[in-house]
Length: 158
Image 1 (tube, helix red, strand yellow):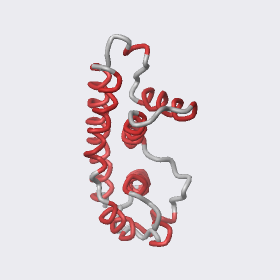
Image 2 (cartoon, one colour):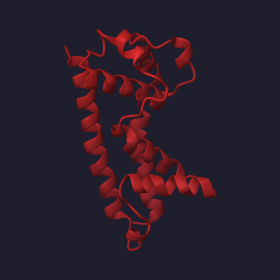
Image 3 (cartoon, helix red, strand yellow):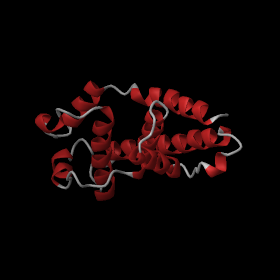
């Protein structure tokens, strides 16, 4: 597999994640006591990130994400770390964009950092990018499963 084919596949994989609708995520965030005005400019991934941060706080503190949302919000700040379960999704987003543009120095650094998130280097792919794509799939499967478990546990905490 060539590098352009790899990046095109990353774009196609991201299309599935890109189908996350902003409106339902915004409704969820507002239902969890986040201010509508604060969220007004957030798109789907930023909203998912906020919800995931709240879920991490809920699980780590033994709270229920829904029932204890006001308490959870009081422990949340905009500098609360984004749970690692989202790293591969954000890295995939960078790879998706990287395939569509000539990369400036800064964008190339973002691209290389995105590859590193998956444990991939361009040097490893000198003979082809097929294994790199397998790595992307495998990491996304694990991270999405873990993200699902985090959200489920946050909702079920009593």
